[in-house]
Length: 168
Image (cartoon, rainbow, N blue to C red; front, side):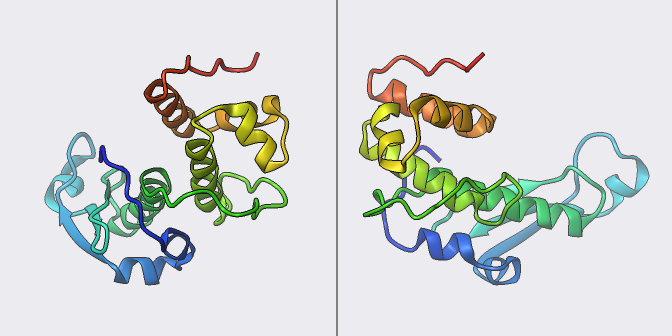
């Protein structure tokens, strides 16, 4: 999605349990494409979720299991919500540490980082200072997540800044 959503409530959506988030979505099923043999080509294992309040979508057809694809689509939907839905920076930085990428709070952290970077016109030094981090530490954290890194550099291009360089 090219436009960024700007309305409150993103953190509520990101903190929902899988069942609660699924209740806010329309689920479409289809046959998975690609390799996988007779079972994959004969069952509707691919899952596409559409978050009804926002229209944001995520899909997964990586496995022959509809349940695994649903879980994967939910993870991807949380990431899409975090990357697409801007709501302005928090008044103060709400995280004392950095959650791991598998932590349930990681999408909220990534969304807050993008909010702060957007408010700082994608100047890493200013964003890092607000978050209580050094610039190098912020750049390393961003570089650890390829999709987040790409998103940040897209924002920097929009603000006529050079892309961040990956740390050595």
